[in-house]
Length: 221
Image (cartoon, rainbow, N blue to C red; front, top):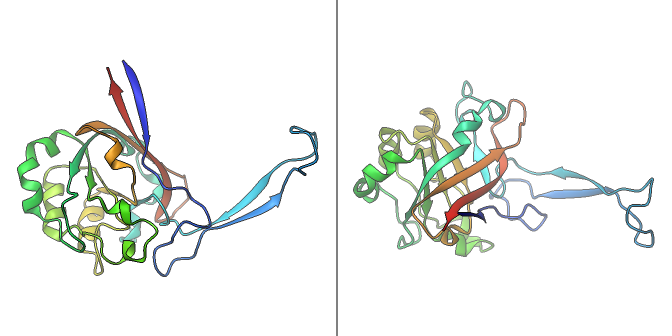
């Protein structure tokens, strides 16, 4: 049995588009190894500084993101970030077409057997386009409540957000201790409905979210 790893994360670089209104990614080179020196020359190293919104690129929302008394990203149980996941294909959704409880109800039993649900809307194909942030399919409040009723502990999606303002789905999910992972990519490479998912946040003290390196781990015969 072999294990296949599918990277579900976008690169974090100055070219990474931030959510509208957020600061762009800045990577400042502090020191660099002169090109004329042999690699590994003592006294020389490459070092950098990173400045970015915690919600740029592939990232996780902590409960503190919408609740001032909610758990912050450094306090999220790591076991909640790793485990069995179900991939649900919703790629027939049109721009701005809502993901409702009716879309999810036929899959209730399968959703209930997995602790994590990953929604493939096909929206990743619009990454880098202005419409990526304006026309994505959102999760409705009733769909979020359905997932809470199914005891899902993490929802991942290939859009910049699970909803639009006033963020009803965020309030329902985060208010019921359901983690949210946004801006996933490469979901079409998973190739099966059940797999192992992992997305570990940085241990940023007292804050609302973090970039993650999200992966799918697939057993192959």
